[in-house]
Image (cartoon, rainbow, N blue to C red; front, side, top):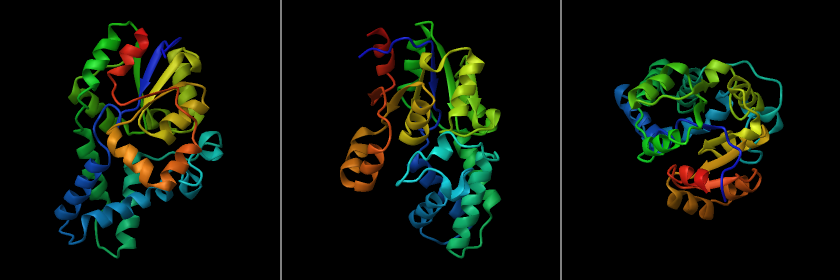
Length: 262
């Protein structure tokens, strides 16, 4: 297959361009507990912290979950009151500390995550693929559920520049809601079907962009591990079945220039 009729390629940031996923968050949790001199199992705390994400997010418990990964309220419903990604992390830490009856500082913990993610490194395929795409004279952009401060620090540190950079903070909307994608289309001047969204999250990226009418490409980072998870975790497999199929699937960003050229 060939990518056709695309005038703008939008990339998710973390987990797509920048290597900051589960392992990096695990390391951040370990550092936070050590820095705050909290003697508690790092992995157990990390699991609780992740579990507290939904209720700490902008949609609360009505938001995405395994049983209903893309609920209509998160895709098309009234926009909830916006709050920063930093605030979501703070709430997660507050709830996780309370759950485990630990005395900890959620503000300091959220600050540590912000500092670490601002220093995120690029995946090895990111810079070369972006360079190749720039030679095709196609517009490139970033759309991320992120705060502007750490997102722009990451981009500057990596030496990356784009035609358009927008975030959940700049637009005051979170993926997967259709309005965040439609607003970027309006800003860029392109119709949704002229935009390809590239992301690693089947829910926020593929589900959200598809619902908004964009073309989608799912980048499967560490495909061996993810395929094992899909095969071994029945719930995850069922969740994927409830999500729209991406237009393209690849294990490397280097595939995108090839798909553009046919």
